[in-house]
Image 1: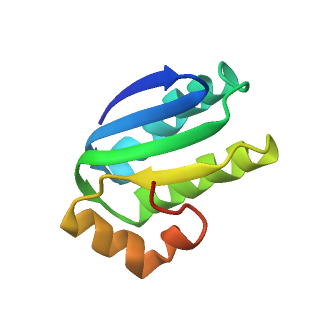
Image 2: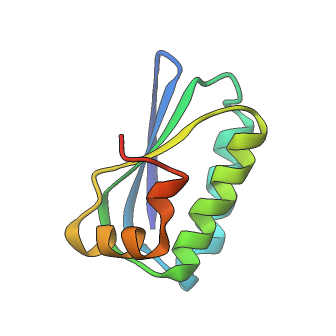
Length: 102
């Protein structure tokens, strides 16, 4: 899993690339937590999923955990760019109910 980000005018976009699964979720969680802790002044947080080739339930759990962390600071979280396969997982899980499309 490769994570890149861009902070433009208080809008943080995080680009997730590769597979978000049991193998990569722990390391991704740690990287994202550090990024969030260092940028608590942002207005909006967007997960750009266009680079994800696969995501399983562990990945969903990791995203929900970051959502909860950001919510504590009043920062809204959105999802964008999901491929057809990843979008199916998101829809089945109901993730768009808490993190809408951006």
